[in-house]
Image (cartoon, rainbow, N blue to C red; front, side):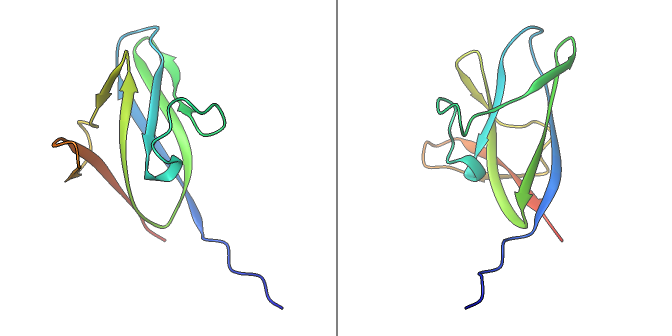
Length: 98
């Protein structure tokens, strides 16, 4: 018996400019849009005052995501591509290629 191939993952860095001292998370198709599950939540690190970033290892393909801070969902203003969602707003889209 052979093992199923593990999807190839690539390092992706996302960044966000926000209120200094805030907690900023990124959620999306890669973590079931989770902000409350401690095992799945992706909390961004504040590198400098108000500048947050995170490194993710995502499988090759297209992934939708948003930032979450201070009780608000925020679409990435730097995203080159956006997709409409079922709530009548938009999600940022990132394409991870080989």
